[in-house]
Length: 343
Image (cartoon, rainbow, N blue to C red; front, side):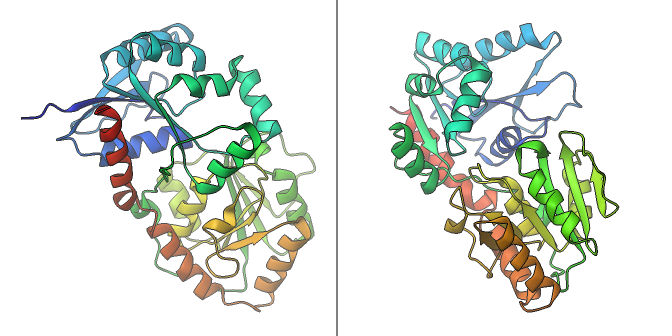
């Protein structure tokens, strides 16, 4: 009998952000008969356990024990997945030192702002970090092409698209125009174009604008603005049942997971085109892709005046979300990890 591949997914599955949630999904969906999977839990959050998956608890004090958590699990693994911008230099050095097969995913465009931010955060040139790993994948063709043109950063030909847990958000009650409630969802909305969102809220006082997440203190609080803290996936899915439009005015992204989650709920997204969103969103078909704030206003006016069938766009958005279900996307990841393990 062939032994299972020892796979370390370097993320905290009990914390809510894109990389952590993606590793949670990978741990759930990868074939346990072929992979012996280890993940991390962070001491400060309620633990999550998955049948057939080993969970390593990173205890307090985190700033010290995080080194041990990564070191111990990297050394024990056959293949290491490092999606997070955490201990970049240390983790890549350990992988090299012990000859571990390792890979990462680039989940956003490395424009000047993001490139400088990543460098300042880690104190390490991210391009050097990627060069130390066995393989680097992009999560969309646009990201792959952009980063190669901008930084000569070559990634694997295979694209590792991210999936979504569609059943957590699925709502087959389609949205209808005219719209009354819109939403922006972000872990840190300060980085996701919240000023444009607030400008729209100021412009459309007849609409409720829901803001989910954390970020800078909102000045000049508007009467039609409803602020929520971070919500669990269940809480968010319940809120989305009463929302007609997701406005996501970030200019620098990769493949925003939240767009797929809201799509599964039948809530189409209104986004900017800067990061290649028109490669998966068809304008006025399953969502809206625009260039400027004024163009966002045109879309909102159309929906307010019932010029476009939000019902059909909502149906199409659900199909978009379902097409990215992890059950459909996991095979590409499965094959890529097995191929790396056999090199």
